Image (cartoon, rainbow, N blue to C red; front, side, top):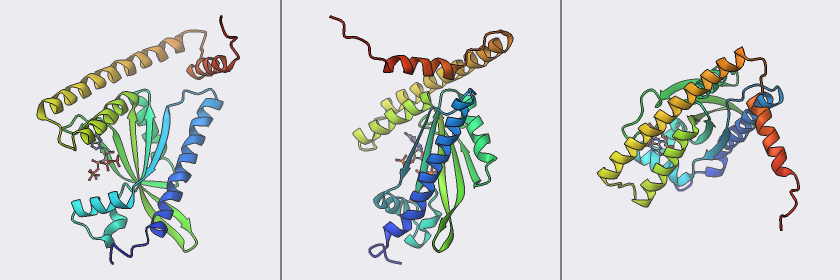
Length: 228
Ligand code: 0O2
């Protein structure tokens, strides 16, 4: 098949469908936790569809042909951020138990970070998109990470482009060091959270985190008279 007459719009449609579908499903999970007053492991959910240019670049980099384009596993990407490390693995368990996707690969860059310092849990899943021509299996990539991991990855990603992917070694080392600091923060916050949970279990009053947050937002919506 020739790249020039490749029908990207038709090709990408099942991926776009899978992506929007899953974003809605995850929003629903988040909403259920909140409505039922349960501790919600999801902080934020975003998605992106890889552009044709970026798909072609990846095919070239991996020495693959356009005929193999369906083997690219991150055309539809879902990113979920969480407050705590344990939430990341809770979401993994939730996704693992779902019947509408099959996880085919797990890349745990939290336990085994990349040399750059990148940390995140990546899941490659297969999803059957229903099309007018029948079921179309598509790959989706889930990137699940804490807010601290996300902060690091966002800054490192933007710096990479600022330096045209050529970050000086001394700055690379400092970025790797910064990633360790972010991870230490994650570990400490996750421990504090576990200890708070045990403390809450022992205590009579159980104010849920979600209740506290919703009150805070309600307050910010109120008309506060201008001070003179
Ligand atoms: P974007 O804009 O997020 O789509 P490859 O995709 O070939 O590079 P592989 O092994 O197929 O590598 O996938 P991998 O490494 O499991 O995941 C690649 C994605 O993880 C990247 O996608 C980034 O989103 C993220 N990632 C991996 N390593 C790093 C890193 O060192 N720094 C940052 N900031 N992100 C990383 P894309 O396609 O590069 O970009």
